[in-house]
Length: 169
Image (cartoon, rainbow, N blue to C red):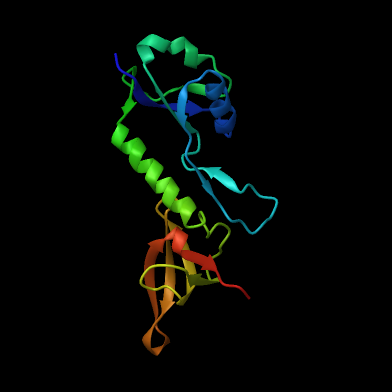
């Protein structure tokens, strides 16, 4: 049986421990993390893109389920009907590119923004415009801002989160 990608579920906030344990056992892993620029300088600067999950690449028949079952921090493989669910290679590749792109833009920049705060749009067709932060939507990837256009009318616009930054005072 050829090696496949699987999603391994971890205990709450134990993804990093699980990632390290898998590395010690020479198991190929993908643990997508994104940089976050927070208001609080003591807050975590890197967060799991999929909290509670680490992706592993192995031949499950060769490695054996018990190898994974007893790792510190693991709760089990993501399974459906008792069968471990494989993750397509194309999805892993797409996730790698997505995480690289987010981190390449400086990470998720809106963390800690509150509705009503002034923001500046950093990229895209509205680059350089000022707006008002409205809300975070769609699982940390997009935000809605209110853009001041003609006649000072506020128009809601949805943008990738990496394009928005808190306006310097």
